[in-house]
Length: 290
Image 1 (cartoon, rainbow, N blue to C red):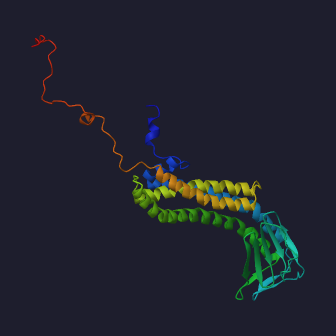
Image 2: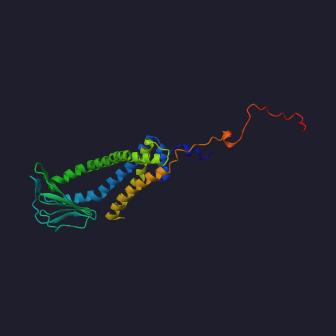
Image 3: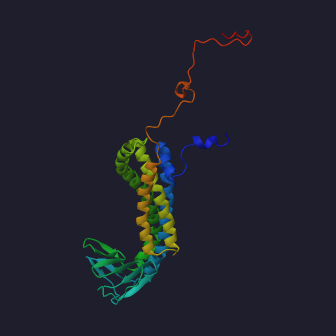
């Protein structure tokens, strides 16, 4: 047939419940390849966002630092004593406020405020504190940080790329392992044709639609199409999407009790055949009726 090759090439997309269910019978190589491609796209999206939305603000904040300054003995020593902004945008802002007076705050999605003894990270989720350690010394001036940032910015982006890539794959594998046991039990209860290995592969495929949704969300947030609140809501929805595809893929699996009928088994169709009966001779004269 013209489209016969499509039936034998295996599952090709996990965007529908039937597509996710088909990956339960796929090879592990196909699952790993699919996860690698999607994780590659996600890592590229994260690096694009950080490089285009955050890195320019970091560079601008370093350019506005004083010529001298140092974090030494757990204390920030800086000639700047008045609160002031270093750099700001809609998504990220840096400020210097040694006493955390609150005079250098902006409605950015994330604000980093350097104080005398700690640094504050403010966002919609609240405020986090990070105290300076007493056992190290960090240069906090434009003269030292500008060449350091120029040299380490590309390697840091590559480190971020690799961390997201392999971190996502490892996370998907562990979550699939956790999901596979209840999926396997549910398959037994629902009489679905699926073993433990097939449950792991189905769970692995169910993460892909949510991951693709988050990739689109990262670009939408980076371009300003959606707000931070909408992005956080999307983060919650993408987990729900993964659970929905797990359940939908399970229900789309064929029942384990289904038996494919043999069309050549004429005994099941109520047709009896005498194997020893001789074929009728078409040239013999017709028998007289009694």
